[in-house]
Image 1 (tube, rainbow, N blue to C red):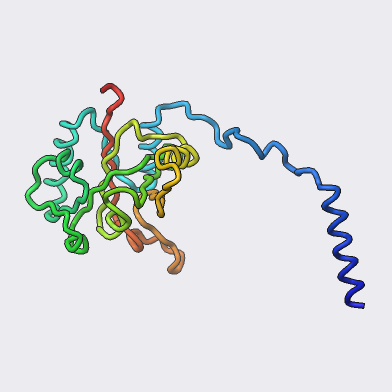
Image 2 (image 1 turned 60 degrees about the vertical axis):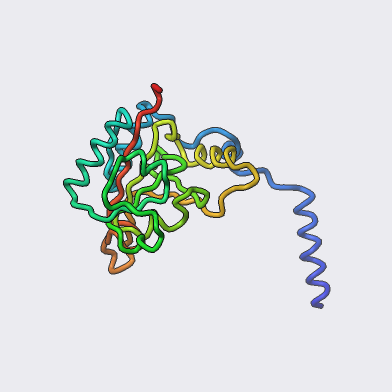
Amino acid sequence: MIRSAKDTILKKIREALSQPTPIPFPKSEGQSLVFQPLHQELEIEFAERFTTLQGQFAFCLSRKELVSQFNALLAKTGWQKIYCQEPELTLLIGQQPDISNNPADLASCDVAITSCEYLVARTGSIVMSAAQLSGRKTSVYAPVHVCIAYASQLVFDIKDALEGIKERYGNTIPSLITFATGPSRTADIEKTLVVGVHGPKEVFVFLIDDTSE
């Protein structure tokens, strides 16, 4: 009896596979974009999305302006301990008295500085990977995360960022790809939004215009 029931089920499966059901939404498959293209510059779209998510954004026309704006922010916030593992960024922001690249100092720093792989305009996200010199922890452990990026790193959607990473790394895709969208937040506790539980309380993006260089 059990064998007969099993044979009946297998027979029905074989019959179903021999006559496949048409895809119910054929237009959902393909390369067309789900979201409508932007009607404004990527820089503006990213800034609007990012600041809506409580991120803080600064546009710099040059590297010199980056140094000026960063120093002004230091004077305003009073940050004392700066952590950065990327030599290029250390040179970029100029001489800072208390900047460290020692991993042991990460837990006690006021702010951590990183670069990124891409910025996603549609979602206001920072895309980072384990292949960067900053590694996995730098953008998460510090109470404040400062990301320094270039306008040429802006892409429209997450798909564009993933395709760019695949093209850049080929068969050696980084073991971790992170999409950070504003400061860390959760509403798990009594449905009350709390910022900075699983990551930084503040996130800054300094975007340098390199399109005219």
